[in-house]
Image (cartoon, rainbow, N blue to C red; front, side, top):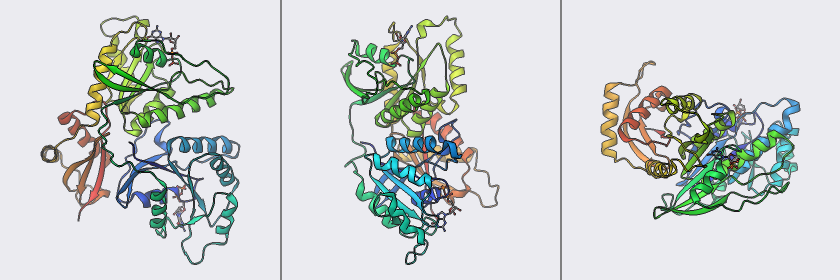
Length: 437
Ligand code: GDP
Ligand code: GDP
């Protein structure tokens, strides 16, 4: 079972980032510059009363007037697709705007639980006059908080926790490896799934306007159970190209969230496209195991260097996914599909690997000794010790004197050292900083 996901939505300047930072506390969201993906989104783990959930700040999209409806719709749809609960943040000083109304309308239509957060109630006993205006949004009682000074945020979190379902055991040792097959249309996802299953599956025809959810297909391979989460075979007639793209991205998100290992399928003929990058970014962001599957390899004229050159192209375009293995296959001829399944096992293993604290700290001490953190602001960063707090993906807590002193490039360095020593092929590594006086 996955952790529940809570999304913060709302128009710019209502205080979403302030609330996000308030909730995640000292945890640091590691944000990377992935084209088109994380620039406007923050993602972090949050904890309240011993319950752990993922928090997404859907970001401060700046809309121009004519873009308002599409952009808002996009943001909301994404949040709805990804999350179990939505915190819709409004500004109780400014009151309701047309954007708020548009967002509220979308949220009312969705089935997702929503908490209407009335931010900037800095003085609880004297809420701003516009606070009462928020009842008009038709989303129930506004919950007054001040993200800036923290008033009522604890009570808000109590409410959040009460509305979520927490799995009994996160480390539920499910022996079934869940594989999501994702990629843009026509790269060969259905063909790949069929080839892996070794049979033609019935694919429901394109009926305009119909939607089907991802199909889960149990699969046995060499005596081991797997579950294929397949986004292929789902087509919807759409008048607008952009609509179709958004639709398939939403589908991918659902599949990726549930998977242990995502197969990012790319067409050898076309190489890495913008949409491939987006999907790759999502896999990275969600910390799933990942294999880059270059399909239709049978169509490529090859010499001894073709595969290496192709790999270079991929890592150049998907620089943030350098930890992901690349495999060249053909769903049509069946080339390397056995190898692909071996890789799935390998990546799944790495994704849930645990490193013993003693060895981890030995490696950490050596790394710090070899290349101490730069002390550019006078006070040096001290890293006391590390421990692995989670798997899927591997997550390490670093106990430090002052989290502010940690530089992103130093985390990069540690990540590289950890990879050299422990592997972790095909999975992201996350760091969480904890301060100790
Ligand atoms: P976002 O664009 O929705 O992420 O909004 P920000 O978190 O960047 O906040 C926008 C502005 O509102 C900033 O100047 C914040 O300091 C201010 N702000 C956020 N929360 C509160 C609050 O609870 N009370 C007051 N008075 N100001 C706040
Ligand atoms: P999906 O939209 O990603 O599910 O893609 P499909 O599985 O429907 O495949 C799209 C097209 O590519 C079909 O015409 C397939 O026959 C073709 N195709 C899929 N895999 C391969 C492959 O490995 N080699 C070749 N030559 N064609 C393929």
